[in-house]
Amino acid sequence: MRDRLLRDGYVVLAIVFVVLRLLAIEPWDDSVDAYAYWATRSGDLYAAAGTGLIGSYLYSPAFAQALAPLVWLPWPVFAAAWTALLLAVYRLVVGPRLALPLLLFVPIPFEIVSGNVHLLFAAAIAFGFRYPALWALVLLTKVTPGLGLVWFLVRREWRALGIALGVTAAIAAVSYLLAPADWWRWLEVLRRDAAGPLATPGWYLPVSLLVRLPLATAIVAWGGLTDRRWTVPVAAALALPVLWLNGLAILAALVPLARASRSALPMALVRARSQPAA
Image (cartoon, rainbow, N blue to C red; front, side):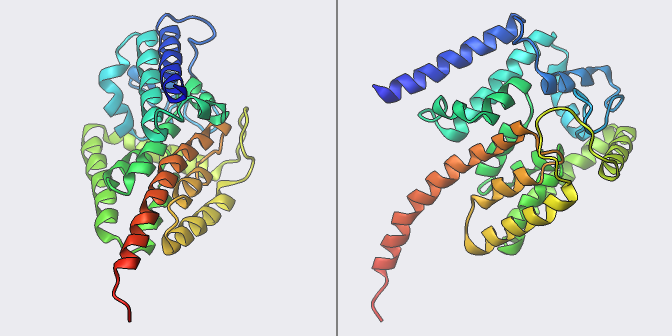
């Protein structure tokens, strides 16, 4: 009964929130990051680009091109559809039993309200061990959390690393052929933001990316060498260009990784017991 209440409670809450977005009921009609994605319909992707500018689009042209069929929907419809996607992906990552109680982890509801891509990152990381092509989403949006691929590097999992980088390169190549000028503008945005000081409102960790990147790399490298998958979402969150509070929603990936770790332990014990004695 408890599990059913948790599952059904989340579904009801999700439906209500999506409907509030669809009907543009204040204040739930506002979704800052989702609006930035929707605003790419203007065709001028980087008119307001700059780290710290609320609502500016900062990702690669490839992400905007992938969203192109959706951004021509009216804003309330797009906001509702994007919110429904985030809610569905979040439930897929953490499971139906934990979806409702984990909303008490403040970064997750903040993420759903703002409409960013961190829950999509959580899914890409959680399932990226099996489907490494999912890392293309990370590399073609916020870029630096892609250092999670160091996991495959230190473990010499060349096939997985090759798939992740190859799929990313293939998508980027096609995207560049469609909009070469936008790609050059995006690279300039990345260069300018990396060199400039951080000045942005909101709740974020005021520590330079140049300080956080080596630490994140060390964490995921250690995790790869010692078979600790939980280090990948931790390192990816730490490596975000700006570590906003809602960026910690990436840590939702810890739930399926912990679950997989627990299920792998009995199998390891069975294999150990089946080994012949020396």
